Length: 108
Image 1 (spheres, rainbow, N blue to C red):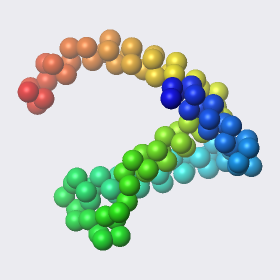
Image 2 (cartoon, helix red, strand yellow):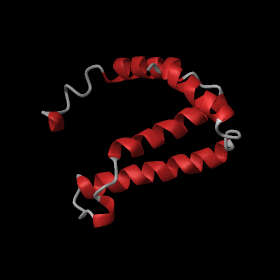
Image 3 (tube, rainbow, N blue to C red):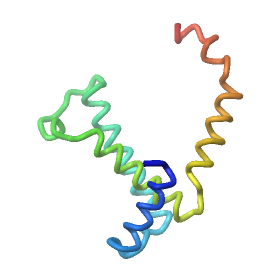
């Protein structure tokens, strides 16, 4: 599935299964909540915090997909074409960071 297809599928789901998009501010708060759920898994599963029994069955992929879902919702409702935005962002990073990371002694 392409990013464009994902944007379309989310929009179709919202307009057929959902009632409407939550407003942009609500979706921003939901995005923050979903990122927090990913952070909790990462800190406990891969970081130094111990993992509670209630967290051991959390599906990282599902939580990352929740983040992607809300991000796509925000892009759709604000008119952002994520395919084009990502291409521009990748180009910006390539120009800006083309040599920077190779010269970083911390990464060697």
